[in-house]
Length: 47
Image (tube, rainbow, N blue to C red; front, side, top):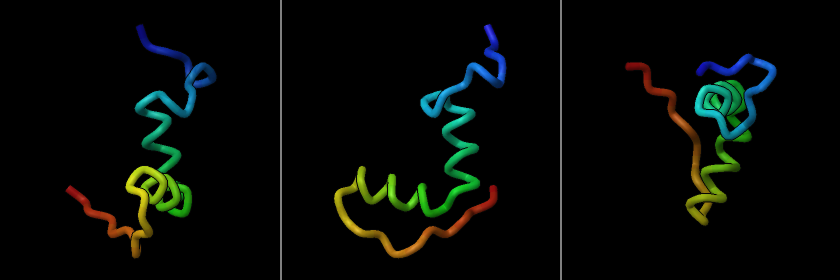
């Protein structure tokens, strides 16, 4: 069953991807937290 946009949270796959796609700084911070080390920069790859 599909959720309404208002019901989505950060842990929903769609919302998680949209937030990190639009907020590169948050994406870097999350990756550094997960990896436990500093990363240089992100490179966007288009399929």
